[in-house]
Length: 253
Image 1 (cartoon, one colour):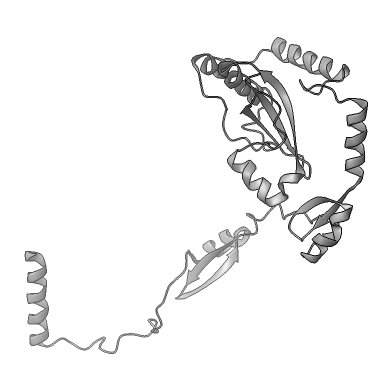
Image 2: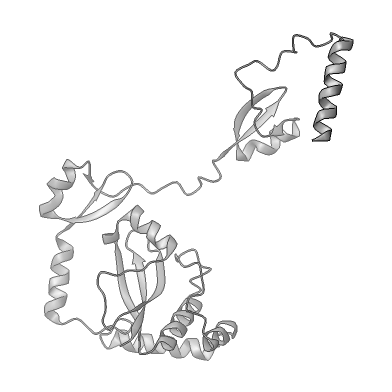
């Protein structure tokens, strides 16, 4: 085996990532390196992601083209249920041709039939089936895991490590989901008559209709709302001449 196309899944929110990895065997320590996926690892914890093989590949071209194929098949680069942001592959000539050719219904049906065959025969998308002993070990290991949170992320730890996590500020249970509409709740600066304050984005149009301007009026530590001390006092002839000479020097430079 040259490498494989894999699918990584966030066990907390179900979001996925499709990628490729060069290896002659399934690498249990590798779950992907996409930019958004790395951020998700930091947010949710690396241990809260699972990884499975979609296809084993036996050449570089096969690996690149297969990654492109699976990303297109699941629309992973445009579906917000995936962390993918690109079409994948190294864009070989064959890969570029496949990328811009539509996947026919016959191909999709054929591929789904292959997936069903693998699952019905004990394979999970190209992976070898676990033995009864392996399945028992996996089942027992899952039962030993306990959900803990520090208020921001959820981690699954073994029961014998619960006390250690408690000492580091973790509590039993799942973290609360982040607010989905943070952008809608963002505030904007508006100003009018020298006064500035922030308003909710949803109320911005109302303030603009009332004559407010978008942005913040900045002042120094001096009160610039007051007129200058010499405002209205005519300049002397001497001052005018100094200003004229200064202006001429600047123009010469």
